[in-house]
Amino acid sequence: MIPRYSRPDMVAIWSPETKFRIWFEIEAHAGDAMAKLGTIPAENAAAVWKAKDVAFDVARIDEIERVTKHDVIAFLTHLAEIVGADAARFVHQGMTSSDVLDTTLNVQLARASDILLADMDALLAALKKRAMEHKMTIRIGRSHGIHAEPTTMGLTFARFYAEMERNRNRLEKARYEIATGALSGAVGTFANIDPAVEAHVCDQMGLRPEPISTQVIPRDRHAMFFATLGVIASSVENLATEIRHMQRTEVLEAEEFFSKGQKGSSAMPHKRNPVLTENLTGLARMVRSMAIPAMENVALWHERDISHSSVERMIGPDATITLDFALARLTNVVENLVVYPDNMLANMNKFRGLVHSQRVLLALTQKGVSREDAYAIVQRNAMKVWEDGADFMAELKADADVTAALSDAEIEDKFDLGYHTKHVETIFSRVFGE
Image (cartoon, rainbow, N blue to C red; front, top):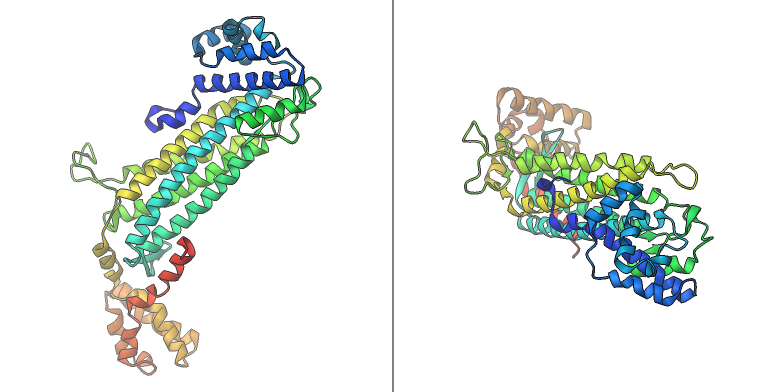
């Protein structure tokens, strides 16, 4: 992933140094288990641990691979250079490359999940704080982009909190799904390696043994993992899109924080653009795009092929690094979002009470007017507001069909904003608990 959209902790998980360190730990722990079983001499297993604090030479491994054309063999050759040929004689005993590669990938994905879960905790905290701050800040709800009925800015934050909380639960499940390891040997039969070795290595690496592997860990696990990242990215875009709409000049109900010295346009000095949330929309597209190849990786030939390998070398780092960056950026946007309550009220009143049409409709039906007639009565008055700029309440009070059923006081009561916030506390208790 390019540095522009990367954060160091997540990048470190995917570095060659980290990968080779995990490879070493798998091989060394496997040696310990084999020695305990009596498969290899205990002194050989112990000698491998001499490389425990050694920094593996990535350039040297790459140099060997240019000859061997095999990355795992290149690493094992370099390991033998460090610990000595005799000590390394039993390294990788009964194992196949996928035992190391697949188990390592799942270690990395599990560690990446831990960072992403922490990211989501930070985002949830920011959303909850802003929801509480604006619990009763009135704004207009929109359907199809058109004014509908009043809601609150707090409810807007609360619904995104609930969505992200669902996503966090999904990610926890995805982490569990991916956190398996396999050291089952060629075609997964354990013919040349005892299942106890797999169990020991998985325990040491924080994984569960894969119940049944072929020569690879089943890729439906990875498909589910990357699909989950795609869903989370879609929710990032959902929130980013809402903020982008709110920042439009003719709306301006909220905007990204504009720092001192920041420039919005190279040509127009007045511009304050929603660049962060636009960026998040683009990053979400990239994370989502990686779910499809992960799903296409599920179908492999027989007990193993490597058609999935090149895909995962890309999407493993890129999807997790990108989503980590996106979640952190979105948290920053939410924490520093500038909210304009006065503009929210002004926008809601732009069409002079039109947003209260449903309450008038319902009031007429409760007075004995048929729903069809009530709808027609309210709609004809509403259209005068749309088309002629009339005042909705004034038109209703001048309509004989309306006043035949409702008094002026009853009409005015239907324009009470408090009516629309009476269940906010109930909704908040559902989302955030008592």
